[in-house]
Image 1 (cartoon, protein in one colour):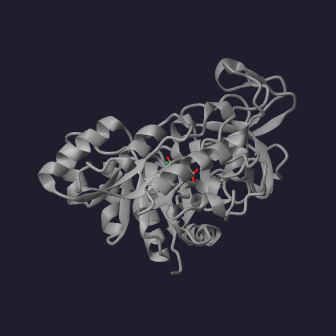
Image 2 (cartoon, rainbow, N blue to C red; image 1 turned 30 degrees about the horizontal axis):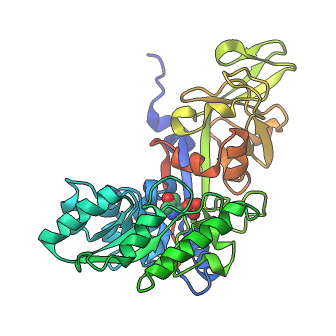
Length: 388
Ligand SMILES: *Cc1c(COP(=O)(O)O)cnc(C)c1O
């Protein structure tokens, strides 16, 4: 009888997930407290859209609620419904507003729509005429040209004495286009436009700044701030030292280590040719996991070449990607890591404390936001509990 290798004989490390995210909830709570402090007199909300930037809205929402957050922003109502049990007394604002057919989910879960167009406003008022008063937020566009009532429409609404009593906006908000660039003249222009509307709606709270805007100073903070990326350790300001604590570590398991000779090629398209005898680690992560194809090794021909290529970290060494990133697997050059330090079954750090998510994002020509929200569904999520 031939020896059969069964899963119970496998080394313990192979029983663990091939891809894991370790999420430090304590760091998220600390980052929220930092942003709350930086928000001065304003209250600090928490933006938890897109599954809390890929990190899990339930655990993250609960942590932020325990840390003291009482205002949350989500993108769509389903996210608000998921969050509600974890943030029982909080206000949950839904940035995409309310559309016909969504009445039940809003009213059942006590979600506050952010009304951002005349069309939505008309629908909202017709709903209120049946239902009676219910809070909403209003968004005004001050130069982003994304969602929002026009400045003129918002000012006209403020002056409209005939507007229904049941319309009870509790928040007036807008969003900065260039908050990450303190030198951009857009910031002041948007600030001045927003100040006009905030004054016209002086009875209600106002909110302008996301993570980056909070750093622009007290004028930008109004009554409520709306940080997202900073809570998750990402870079809010371009070209400045990131003051936030790293929150996530993403790791992929090495499935195999192989020796390859100088002159051999690596991965699809045979587009990377080895210039020396090499040791390669084949890691269990690919573009289906949000490890973008643009992270392929330096000099690898893609449709759009020219990016620097990513590195991961193992045993304190930085190891570059070689060849193209594939759907489920990526190849790293570990030739320079002493062989005693790497075995198959070990984990490579893709990003985390040793490789900041924004540094990895830059190698793909993108931003930390996109790396986090594109993580895919195959990671095991390990939560380190916040000590609250
Ligand atoms: C996503 C978003 C935020 C949070 O932005 P960060 O840059 O992640 O802090 C705040 N406000 C609005 C309207 C958003 O869409």
